[in-house]
Every structure is written in C-alpha cells, then in structure tokens.
Image 1 (cartoon, rainbow, N blue to C red):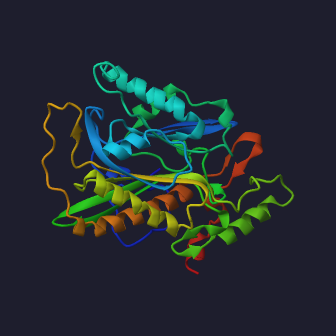
Image 2 (cartoon, rainbow, N blue to C red):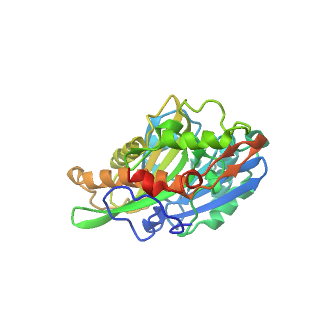
Image 3 (tube, rainbow, N blue to C red):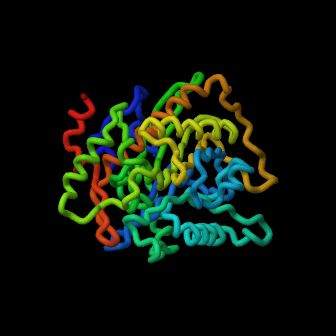
Length: 361
C-alpha cells in the first residue's frame, strides 16, 4: 500500500524514499491478516536486521507513556537495553501464544537456549482489538507468526492489515501506519522512522495538521447511523485502547539515548489529540541498526563512537514528526471493517473525502 493513497503531509523534514520503517537499512516488516466474519485480527512482525537477532542483538530503549497494557518482554528490555528477537505486534489475548511461538522459533535455531545458554526474551506488544474482533475465539496461532515472518519485506502494507486488522482509533478504523524522516545529526545524515499500531483516542479529540477534525467527523458518523444499529461501543468519550510506537534509526545511539528517543514519540502522539488517558496503554520502543551486540561473551563488543548528546535534537524532532505522520497514515490507509456482532468502524477517507478542504479551513 505505500504510495497508493493520498494523505496529509506532517511537519517539515524530508522523508526517506519509502516513507516507512524500512527506510532504515536492514529493517523489514511482515503481516499475517485474519479476516473471517467475527475474526478480525492478525500479526505484524518487525525484523531489526536480516541476521540472527538472538546471536546479534539490536540496542534498544523503551518509554512507557502509560502502562495500561499486557505486553511481554519489557522488563528485561529495560534492564539490558537490547532486542534478542524480532518485534511482534498482536492482539491482547494473543500475547501468550505469540510469545510461546517466538520462543519456539528461537529454540529451533539454537537448541542450546534454555539449556547450556540463557533463555530467550520474546518481545510481544499488544493492543485490544476486541470491539471488531472476537477475542474469545483465540484465533491467532503459531502458524500465523510464521506467515508474518515469511512475509517480512521492504514493501509492506499499511492500514487494517496484520495486527492492525481489528484496531480502532478516534472512533474510526485504526491500524498500522509508518513513516520516516531524514535529518543531519553531526557530519552524517541519519534516518529516523516509525511504525505504529494505532488503537487509541477519544473521537472528538482527533487533530490533523493542527485542525481539530474529531467533532465534525463524529457529526458525519452519527448522521449515517440515524435509524441504524449503533456502531460505537457507548464509551466513545473515554480514552481507551492502546498505541504501540516503534522507532528505528541508523544513528549510533546507546540504549539510554534510544530511551530518550523513544520518549519523543509522545510528542507526535499528543499532536494527534491523545492525552494518554487512564485506559490507553501507550508504549514506545526505539532501536538502532548502527551496530549489534554479541550473545557470546567471547566475541568482542562493538567499538564505535556514539552520537554526542548535544546532537540529538534533530533526531528528537524527526521521531516526533515520524510518529505523528505514521498515525495519520494509519487512519488514511484504513478502510471500513465490519466485525463481530455487526460492529463497524468506518475508514476516515469514507467519512471525509473532502479532507483537503477541511484541513485548509
């Protein structure tokens, strides 16, 4: 889907050629989408590099903006500052299944894990897609993770695909969105890119390019619903759901600096109208592709100069812009989906085909 739809351009920084997470060299994304009546869910996988992530770990930092969530693997990530599996996105009730499947995949590559070697830390993030998806069906299985892994590529779809299939945002259809920004931090150009799993936001709060469009879109939605069964869950004014924000960069940053970069995802999130409400789990992770960390103690640690703290501001700006843009792209890429019990989430472009005029107000 990249490049197949029009969407509002956020910020002033230039994008990479793909305007996605894959603009960071080595990073790929894959989906497996489940679309069958009441089952509207899926799996999305982010591979931080093309190699063996357990043997060659990626440096990473975490920022928990609001901890209303059930993700797995965050505690060790905060302690050690590194990824040792691909990043998996899914629905809340699928976390256990996906973590087990991710562990089994690592063991299949390295039989020493959990025996002669340490155990593996499977990293699984979640959002609750239960409004559209029958979560109690427990539809996601290990094979779906394998399909998402096999699908990983540079050219990946956005919108209501993979883990984003059943997600909602601002009372509309949410899902997967991705964007990138190019900056110069010191002598070398750098890429900062984001991928979001958007499932958050009070409908009236939606803001795009500084324009508060939420109230108008809700008026249009209610006009369509007159005389029809309700298409909302009756709690639209409560911030709930979640958003997962994944940031990748090729800048040489250590795990502490990556944690600082991850926190700037909150700036982009806030600009879309979120205030990280009580029931919204908002979690950001940033990783670098500039180097890897060895699993085996006998292998040398990387020796390279990290970026100076005083040169991080352009990366912070890029992270905020890329995250905001990724959320907007998730909304514009998503199409209307009907799921369990007749529940419907409308795509933003269906409600606002005149979005250019609205944003010009």
